[in-house]
Amino acid sequence: MEDHVQEQGLSKGKFNAMKRGKTIKFTPHAKEKLNMLVKMQVTEEKVVETIKNPESLGPGYFGRKIAQSSLTSELVLRVVYEETNNRVLVITFYPAKRERYV
Image 1 (cartoon, rainbow, N blue to C red):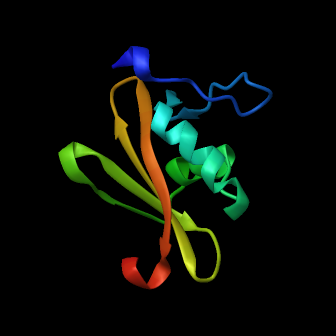
Image 2 (cartoon, one colour):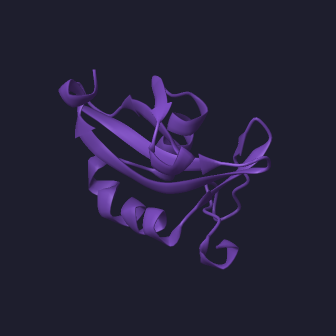
Image 3 (cartoon, one colour):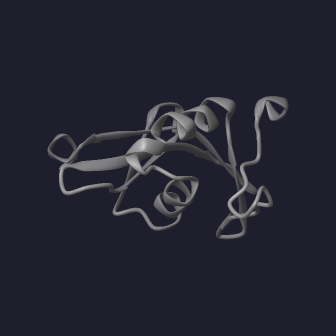
């Protein structure tokens, strides 16, 4: 699985964002989503900030976690990730209507 994970760069490609001392990495799928959602102003920084300081945090399937933060007054950003002893792996993220996840 490690071969399919790409570390994403926050500051000019040199990224070592930490969540309580853990490296945050993005799957190829999550990296692709960054390119698709840039027009909605979803940035790598926003995804990392959502993981570090979520407005809400809940369980996902297969032991994953779902962190949530505001995008707009109507939309939230939901980030699905796996957490191990030494890293956080972003699986996917998506905008969703706030009313659905109150």
